[in-house]
Image (cartoon, rainbow, N blue to C red; front, side, top):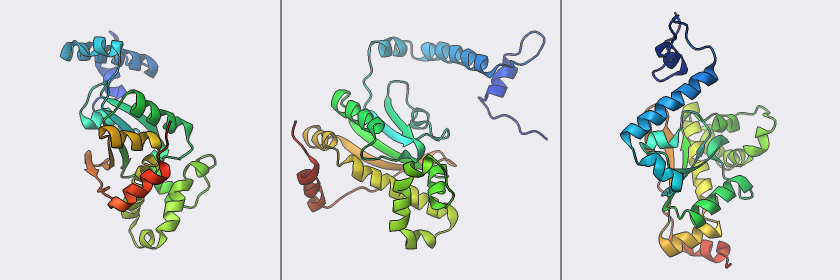
Length: 235
């Protein structure tokens, strides 16, 4: 038997909006445009001031750095609205120190939008993490996933003792912690932490339950002082 389409899927929407001859939409892009009109109308009905306010400007309090995985839509899982979260997503939520894309997002969010929180979020069942735990060549993904393979090397003994799913979660956690370390080596972030109390968080999202878990990212005072001495620069 065919599997029923999940609630809210394109297939369900097409059936609900079938024409007089009961033929569902064939063009899925047309379906997307129709869904957008329904969403805009419903949003305006529930929050009549929201979209006009967003047309003036944005004032998000959160910068979310997450994975591109379609199962991890940050605004949805946080129960928030458009305009609440400034977002950067990539394969396996990796923060490369010299990556201009994530660097530009962080700079803009911290210096210009003045966000109050930065979240780095990994997740269970992450394909990028699973790939880094395997040994198959992945073309252009190989240099992108290099930091994950380096973490695998550093924690090889521990990861080898864990069952597959547990090893994936563990490497996802290590990746988030490494991302936090890289993030806090950026002078713009250190400056905002020091001058206006910017908070940085590491999280893991469980795609099977929809629940977020915050990682303990506390550090000894000596480590914090060493970071400021080494990475905070002056304009």
